[in-house]
Length: 146
Image (cartoon, rainbow, N blue to C red; front, side, top):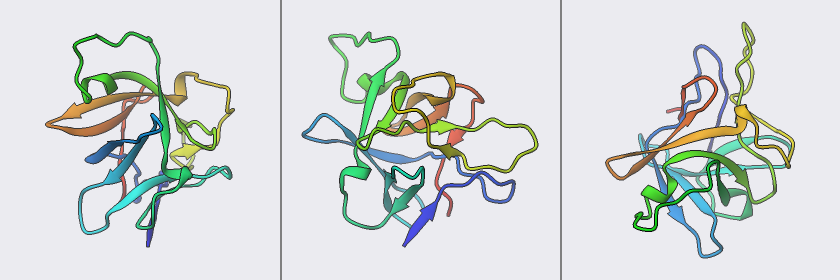
């Protein structure tokens, strides 16, 4: 029922082709929209990140914090998401990308809830109305496994 995001040579976890949803509380949710397994992205306080086929709860709500703080007045919903962002789950954990040499480690890691450093920054790109998350540090895309 879920896809665990890991970063192994044979099991990469770069996310692409997600649908974004703007929630009434100002947060965003991301739905995996490719292949046969659909599910919302969830982040938990223990550092686990899953694409779950379950109901959306607080662990599936993410707050986007603009790195530059500049949003054009004439921007559309999708354009407001473009640029560098730190993605913070509702439970206070930032999603970060690992970039360790010769180590098979989780793509996503639990980080300081007050930090928005390099490995917690992401480019949010619009590809024909769909959202892609690209790591600021290593330039790789975050995707769910098939």
